[in-house]
Image (cartoon, rainbow, N blue to C red; front, side, top):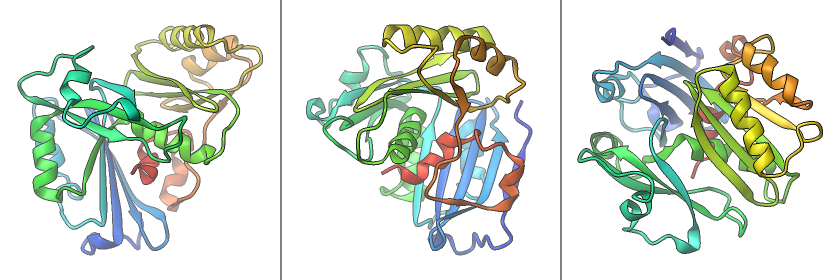
Length: 282
């Protein structure tokens, strides 16, 4: 169970929402929210809250910030749902359900949406197609209007990684993000080579999928760098086990390009990369 965390900078004025961008990451049992002051490009509010399984939409709508309209920008990323990536030239608007049906059958309460990755280049010009609860999409549009965007958590993570890398090609590297029994694995080099999310419950699960991806893509655990973000520390069982297999294992930092208010100093820099990366989501 997530221990509730609510942090607010002394300067934060939610009665003037047009001065802020609002970012949220919602899963089946957890909600994380951050507000960025546009003028200073600074995170000035942060929540990490449990979501009731019985009615998560009511908790979203009832959140003191998400339930308020008028934000200059709003991005809501979802975890735990089905999604797939397509090369942008192959994507045709209106065919989202057909693309997703190759590995996920929409329920009567779901819709399929699309999200184009930011910073498009010939190597990363991709569209994510993903399933969303219809009621969530309708609530977002009703309260926050058509400019508010839904996207999958994996696309938020990729937005941050692409921003960190910049417009030019970078060295080939594996990135991991671990939270809420999900492990997101990305291999990014001159182009996006791999992106997938695995259900994990033990340190052994994390190590297995990491080594599996490295073997499948020809990465060397003794030579190639692996960067990890998420819910772990240097003393955790997961990090310790990974370090026995991967020689060059390091924690990732928060996304560069925005500032963070001092209340976040008590939270490890490797946490919430995907949430803060929504600052770079289109």
